[in-house]
Length: 613
Image 1 (cartoon, helix red, strand yellow):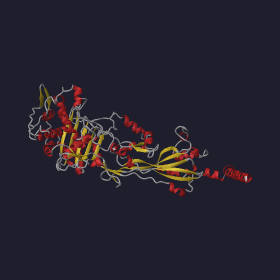
Image 2 (cartoon, rainbow, N blue to C red):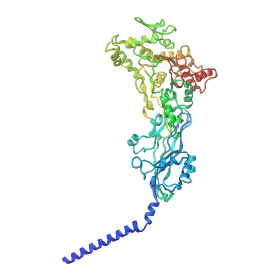
Image 3 (cartoon, rainbow, N blue to C red):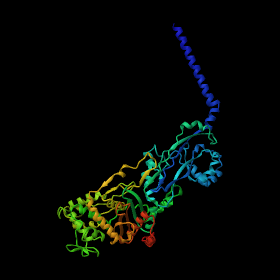
């Protein structure tokens, strides 16, 4: 019995040894003696290509194409696959580079940032024309391949701040979103490009191609199940009227400042001008923009600085309509109250200047002629409502109303870098003068929109929209719609915000703003066929010439446009801001400037109050 088991054990061992010898022999045959499989493996490589999506297009409110895509090619190199005997001279000639440049590009810091086995970008931004010549001979240069990309092109030289520009994604963003971005990808850096990046960018795909040792495709049809097509980005329509935008930029040429126009009924931004500005094409990725970028950064007039949402200004007298509304709501001012003015407002031994105008025997006349004395007193009455020594309570109450109007905080426009402006709080004056020491007379300048009060031009335009709407607004925004039905604009842009001012108080204020245009300080905004309501401001500037300010809306009932204009160092509000505001309203509502107002348009277009160093 034991001998039988021993024999079986020996037989099993012999079978295992024979099988092992056969397996070793077969492996040796395949890998050492027979070169067929080795040659096939060497002759064929599976090449994975990233397919980049077409970025979403951007249209204006009237369907005019603003931002489109230009095809461009990147040439990729896989160092291990390069044929040392390749015709370098021909390759350089086709690509339009010098041999020295080729040598510098082909050698990298291996093992640190680059791998000889991993493709990397050899040459960027090869034009379609250049690539067409190269493509016919690309098979002669194994190790080199193409990647089709899209870069931005612009139909108009306008709206650079609102549209924004593209840049290469940084490593931090890649590490944060490895499933979305890779090194070398492009990303929206500013403006609409940045805010709606997730919709515009689309989704990358990939394609697998089996190539022989000459770089020719083989059996690619058998790899179809591995391929994933790229998904194009979503086209968007924004609320800007590009013709109005271009007109505003022309009016502000040679001047520092900003213009914002809003459709009051929706909160859609019709124009958003910041001057000085720049042509968005100057920062197109494929145009060798480094010099243009450096020049814009060094420019002392700061063309990158978006004055419409980033600059905080003292509003001057355009603050008076808001103050009148709050004073009437608080019961310290009635529509027909008379506050006498002899050319100055007097307190103890001090006098605060005003100008010659009719007696302000009601709110409308006070606004129409911008009486400082009227609003100094109205401001004091608000602040002193609970007593002369209770100024902190009065200011806190005033500020609650101002926050209702969207002041002292970001409105939430769909652009990065919006600033909040400044509404001074009681704590600020406690630190400045001492707690329970300061009084309404210490902060009197706030009553006419001076002092520490600061607003953005966007906030000023929104104030005009609130008054035109008789007490409500929608968050200003640039997105009008996503062309894809799968996306809707963010909910916050459809929410109606109401201010806590009774409807009856808007009548006297609107009457005063209409009077300012027909017979007061804003007559250059008058239009014979449209009732324009507006208010001028002259913002004091301790460092130079005063700033010119205007805000308004039109028509008086069911307004279609609200506008704010701020011209730095423009002097009186009537000098520049009022005519610019009036021209913007006329251009939008009538689509043209009337012949009898062409002189005014030409005066503004030709005026230059700054000069570039």
